Length: 308
Image (cartoon, rainbow, N blue to C red; front, side, top):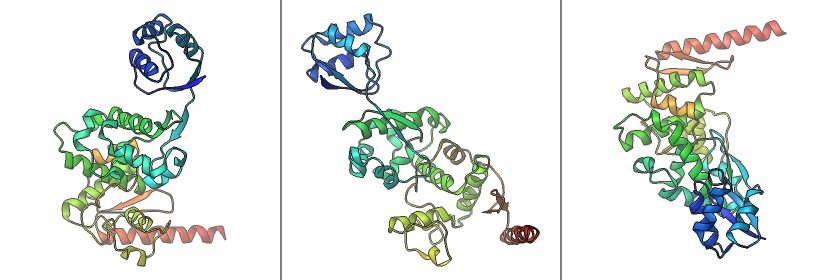
């Protein structure tokens, strides 16, 4: 048997032509396509890697009819960066190949191509997290980009306003990535997005800890908690030192994070912090913000005393 590749999105005739080109059969591609149709396979040809003995179109169709192709599940996790994703794909070329496939605009749906960022790593935000079945071959990462970007277009694309400029959509991608790392409860995402929207409108720094953690990660240092000194990192991604948006997304956002960035909640909050309860507390002024932090700290101390 020889290995024959069926790529995602191919119809029966395209598969037949591909198999002829791969040398699996010397017969006519239209005849093979007809056999696929007669055997009821034309609408359920699964992508993947098949192992087939070369033969006539009839023999090829019969072998494929009773065979499950090889495929591998690749999971894109919300909140991960390019390096994190590429580390788990080293067997298929790792970061270099993933960058190459992200740089190839033909891997993205035509509707998205006009507003894709220039940098390949920034296009990661336009892949929607999920588990995707890809062919374990040299085309695995191409398949991954095609499937994940198509899912983004299906799930997130309809939420993009008609007439939105490419620059506006790219900015939403950055805000969605920050939202992904800042808010863990989907019920709070739109409110968190509204805080960042208000800060941008007033010319205030975003002061997102998630962007600072990303800035340090770019410099080879992994942090889970920040000190005041960590906030001084020299980076365009440090939104404590730089006003406006950072230059690109900091991770791959989930669908709820994208929806929050596209439809932020309208309110007057300018501050928020994560309380010991696991929920965010929101404030309109800095004084309210400090008072809420003191109250949360006192409540925690009282609970600890009761526990003692």
